[in-house]
Image (tube, rainbow, N blue to C red; front, side, top):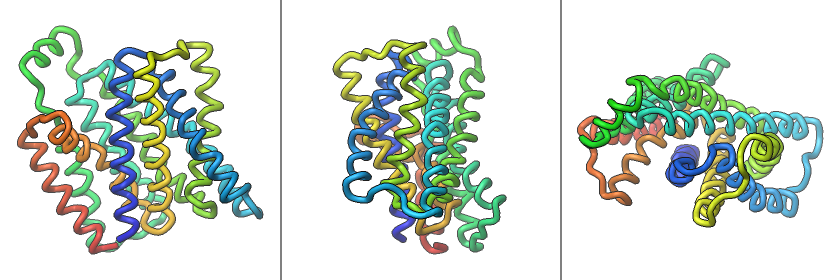
Length: 288
């Protein structure tokens, strides 16, 4: 049950990150937003890691540290692809396709040899279906007209699928680094993420943001760091396939966020998605 809660906590944290990030990338380059988000996560997580946990000890932990280092650039590539998809494409296309990350992750884990119970085997595809349905936004008439004028019907689809394929690897990689504590794994990933993003931000994009956007980016980065720590916990104590699908519930939580914060009304597919997700998570909890 703790693994289920950790996976859902990861999805909630990533939902907060995406909500704030989308508000920034409408006005600023994606690379710049991601850079400042990682700076904030770095400043929080790395001191905690060094002060309370310390450097890796022994061959197993150093090997895990190398794996953790891969997850930073990998996550940045997945996030950049998703945010790029949102900036060039339709939310109604990019959202559901990006939500397939959980399905990709479950497939990767099972192909690599992870076994799941029959109850979990039913819950996994239901959870993926639920988050895809919950990600189908009801467009307004004005947005429909604007999209018809300015965007191709499948705009952003390629970016969304690329993001899903990459983000699906994240739980598998984090689970492979379980010899380290979750905070250490994420702190190391933030170091490598910054090493990748810093030269890109300096060479290809501006590094300055408006104060409000800088604050949003910083909070988004901290939310992302908390989400990855929860995800690392979930993969260490439970099924990687289940953790991947639960992380994919970002689509479901985004729909609920729209209702609670933005006072939006859910479409029928979104309501069906939320109900399906509740059933799926219940099955995963029973099967776990």
